[in-house]
Length: 422
Image (cartoon, rainbow, N blue to C red):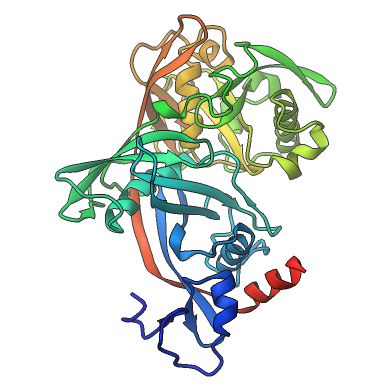
């Protein structure tokens, strides 16, 4: 790619611009950098995965030092800036995400995937937790980039989530050496249809290493803003706090509205913070927003109810097992996080949880989750012998490669790191 664009890698022989940075600086910080005048560039791919969008990098293309790497990624996205105007970030929690992918050295995985939530209003990348929607694009990326050997008609790819050390399997429809994008699968929150990416999420159970119920309780009471709320803390993909809609005073119409009242958002964030303390992620609720902004997730559950989704389609109560709404970095999610869908699927099989109690009747087939954008379906099986254990979880997503090229950053990203190290 670099030769075709008339650019040179830092360690190469070609020099086309007198303003190019010194070789020593690049060897020290970023030997794989591509030189373009007084800027540096890195190969990048923009992909949509499920209802998220982010930038994908090969791990080998990024700086060796994690601190320098993160400064480069922040510059690529244009952070910190809530508009991300000077970068290619999407300026929302769902479109400001990074995936760093490489071939895996683990015996039980084909590729490694490190997920990062890129801050918009502060220069920070949070590597705690996981994004299941971005995970849906890892398999197609691995096929397209030659990280795995493609097989027709589908390539099964074992993906190790570096953030948690767990492994999931993605089944990617393949045409020749590339992932297919055209298909008939529709998912809530994404216009049109695409090729299915079937994801086996069984390996995502218990990311904190304490089981599906990390506190050992199916339902417990936590205090937030002076009020006591029955909740369930469930961990399958990402730890999540589930609370009943009636506890927040929300009916289904308000719950699924495009915007939630500021008071409601503060109450939900306060509940999330209390859950973070209960899970041992932070010591004080005041630190949750700063120290653990991505986990736990907070989701409100409502019994089955009829509503009109964002596309204007009517969803009948009989069409869903329950209705949910949650936040992503304090912003109402337009659908449901894939990792949270795994949590919902697991909790629905555990009697006594807030999720299971929201079901009108015990569901024997797939769990159909009503969201603002439509219905999301997940298959799940839980072994209730002893401590509950996730035996099976499967969900269909779609993904698409949107752009591939070189992302440029100022040379100052290296100079700033050199100054910071002194």
